[in-house]
Length: 199
Image (cartoon, rainbow, N blue to C red; front, side, top):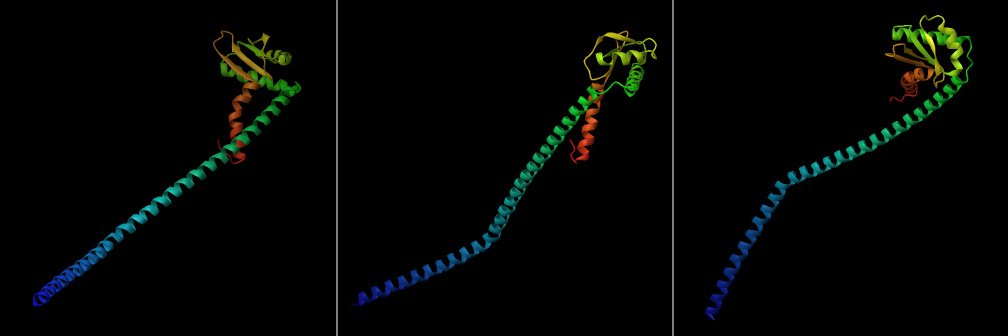
């Protein structure tokens, strides 16, 4: 019985010692875990903040893309509307020019077109082309330009003249069609500016 009692005491001591070691190990593990969590917390918070910051940047970027895209779309619609309106104005103006009477004012216009053309070409030794409707008016105006002659050929245009030097080296298109085409970009820009749309 004594040996049993000694055995029990030995077992109790071993169990007690093992329990102390386990409790000590658990306390150390708990302390180490808490320290690890404490050490990890700032890093985790920093990573969290970085994720939130990146998310906000991405959201801002997407918002700007959407806003920019809709601004561009709205601007393009404005430009299309202005362009359509300009087209209608030009069409109406061209109809009015085509149907305009060839009165005294028109004769003065033809003279000034001839003067401008010969000045640009630097000679009055020219052949002048015009449409069938303006032949008489142009012929009458040519009497003031020595060396200038009216071509027997007619050209398709709203009005005005196309002037070619007699040596064939230079040509200046001063028809109303050509003048309108040269003015179109300026007129478009002016109209677009009036509507607050720049192209």
